[in-house]
Image (cartoon, rainbow, N blue to C red; front, top):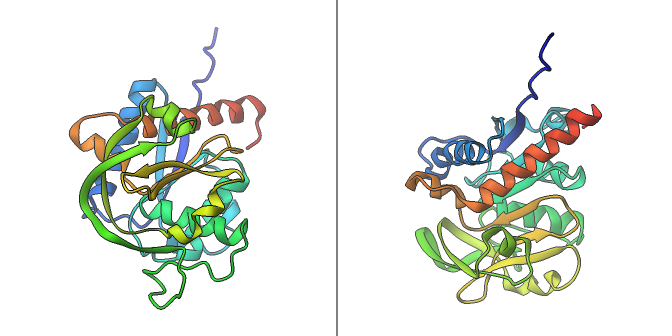
Length: 249
């Protein structure tokens, strides 16, 4: 009697321009592998350079269950990265954005949902008068810091604690001028730093949509699993089970 076919791996798209010199890019495969082993799920990941995201992006991304918009800005093709984030958001695919992924998740949402005219990233538009993504008062290049989880948030549930220490490699963050827009609506604050600045957001009407200014993937370089990456891989695996059961993405 033939054995049933093994379920195919959950497919994860890594949106970004691979550079082995980036610490986060070396860490991400290790972090994904650790999470998959911890959960005993099969996954595979594919790097999707932003420069390839130009035409028929929805068709290109349709085979993937989940999306991770990775660090490394400026991207070669910012509109392509934003299109991939919009695809994950609108098609209810598990999404994780870290560092630049956090910044661009906010840019995509501000443009598409808030319909904020001229939502800008100061790294790309240094003369923008009120950029959504602005220079940090203190650079966080190769720094660590305390992250305070917002009570009742999905992130607080994932961490199961009040605060954590996380690693960074960034010089830009969410402009506090726009923080009031996160007071209501599905995009909410998930974590802040010790000064109160927003360092993570999440969508409450989405199966899994989390973006962090910090880089949880770095835990893998210290031979540690990270709860955010584990939760993301679990969501990808759950999405894969739905796909296999229904036959439809």
